[in-house]
Amino acid sequence: MKLLSRFQVFLYFTCAIQNTACGMHYLAAVFLTLHPKHTCRPPGNVSQIVFHNTSVWKLDDIWTQFSIGRGDYIVVQLYDGDVWELTGCYRYRRENKSSLNYDYDGLKSSSPCVDGFIYDRSKWDNTVVTQWNLVCNREWFASLIQPTFMFGVLLGALAFGYLSDRVGRRLVMWSTSIGMYFFGIAVAFTFDFYSFIITRFLLAVVSSGYLVVVFVYVTEFIGMKARTWASIHLHSFFAIGTMVVALTGYLVRTWWTYQMILSTASLPFVFGCWLLPETPFWLVSEGRYEEAQLILDKVARWNRASTCKLTEILSLDLHDPIAFKPSAGAVEIPAYIFVCLGMDIFGRRNILVFSLLSSAFFSGMVMVIPRDRYIWTVVATMAGKFGIGSAFGLIFLYTAELYPTMIRTQAVGSGSMVSRGGSILAPFSIYLSSIWIFMPQLFVGILAFVSGLLTLNLPETLGKPLATTWEEAARLDEETYNSAGALSPTTSNADVEKKK
Image 1 (tube, rainbow, N blue to C red):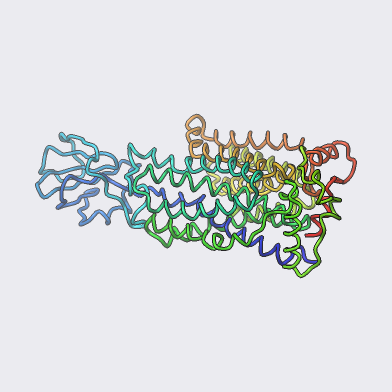
Image 2: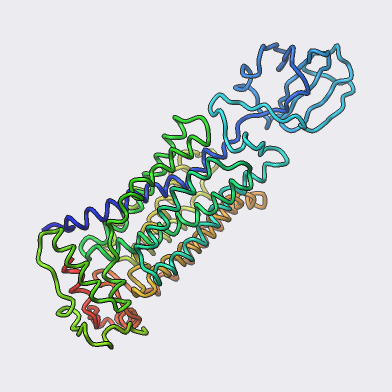
């Protein structure tokens, strides 16, 4: 028997392809913020260049050997006779104009790079860094680009998670997808660094909103038999988007062209999203039973199958006013495959605990492996990444199954918001290594270990239907501790999911 109907297959891949676009925007900064080699621009036209006592005709000939980290500098003579030493962030004018030797012990005066910089353009013609000179005393501006984006992701997950539970999944998916396309294009046309940051922040807000809502949307439309694979592999499409970023970054040499190409990935969904209906689960939770019935009828016609009647499944009188009152109650893809295989056999909670604790274990292993054992360090690091990637792939589905329909998207969004707090802090965690070289690994390992222990207190959701009300969610928790058997929700959600 097929796990997915024709309608579910269409709906799933339509939504999943847009996840690829989200993956592109999340990782786009990897190439947008490339820091090429650079040196101060001299205050005039150059007649001669000397680097390590070797005379060259143009700066492009020395970039492969030039290194700011080891204190390299370039000696140039201008047409007016002045001799300058050029470093990454400063330039020095030699008082003795006749000395073109690389080593010089005479008097010289220093000045900042007021005429700008010369960049190595052998790989990229233009990046955000070279566009607005985000080097030297402005380098910290570049370090804010990804944390600011992740702050937008944090707010978007919370805001659109709330809106989705209030106005519906479909409307939020439409608005965020259109926003992804227009804000993505707008980033390429920003006129200064501040407009670039603000536009990318708004792009992050809508991209995060789509990711949170689409996960819940797919979860509510896919039946129990295929829910695990379908939900987890939404993350695989996100990972594919990160691969497209690498390919695009290799082929394109200007940042605004690169940004526009990535943004066009949203167009197919923008044109096709109007075909997607609202989820019957959300409509039922809002008391809009007649609209839910119309959608079930539409799905049945698409699948050339007989429809199911909500009046029979839910025992409702659609003409009773009371019935309409809602209740008050690349390492990553293998990790996702592991999660899909394991969570349907051993359960969501057990696999999540195993993934978190194994990530903590391998973080500790990195600290004890001798530094000259490079291969083993890489193996332990990848194993830790595998564990945390498995946990990340599972946590979205597990959260969606734990909470009832009326706050499901808010729950997933809140969890995503907290995780993005880690993404904001991650670029700055490298500074912890100044205290102790393994401090970042220790910090991550402790967090994973504590999270794994706390997860033991959560209920198991394997094989249980999605809860619509707080009462059903509470019953799931009670059964975990009382071992009373399978969940029997008052609204027969299991019957609804079997009919899909």
